[in-house]
Image (cartoon, rainbow, N blue to C red):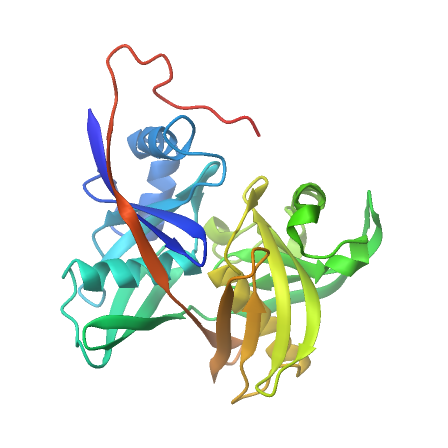
Length: 327
């Protein structure tokens, strides 16, 4: 058995692209549910966990689209399973689709790569000059505030937490509320409190959506307010998702959820740009593309770089075919 991958990173966060993995269902949302306990989950473990991956690996299986309105579909995965949304992955997929010719592109313009994901239909708008990718805009599904000001007692004191949907449900609060700031030196503590808050609110009524497949808290966003630039608010964040994974990028769908919240509070207005930094200093820019009856359609701008391609083989005598995690 062997699998070939095309590996990318978006602002430092890995994204491992895999084709030809059998999945079952008529929509990507159905394929995700079937994959959770199916053969695709064994492939996920094989490619994601050690010794072939690591606890912060991320990737996606390419699937057929839901219908002819999209170019392809994708099942996003991480060390703990299959997620409903992934903005950094969508940006990487836009670059991959254009660079490989899977989607015909305009070498001196913007090419829309339309992708079906478990939370809906998204786009990667790939802007090129002379055939070189300048940047990629992730246009997300409708994002909205679910509830604000949840009082929560944590191991680091009493806090108030907001729940926001950006393709997945995020709990969000200032890092200063738990006595931290978003710097690499505080990574261990940020992971611990991020996991604690996620599991404390996972069953909160506001996190239970009408589509139960999207319910539950996916990640915790802890942010530093860095004031304003001439273009709009400037923040730095870390997103602790799944069960303790740290997003090295500013998190695409997490950034979308921040756009929804800042739009609701009036801190981000039409025509303004959120400058959103990551824990390692990489950056996305985001804006309100349009307002909807319940929230906003966010756009998040970044770029992706190809790391390389790999051929992973399962030795017949390998004692660890499903990999392992130390977290």
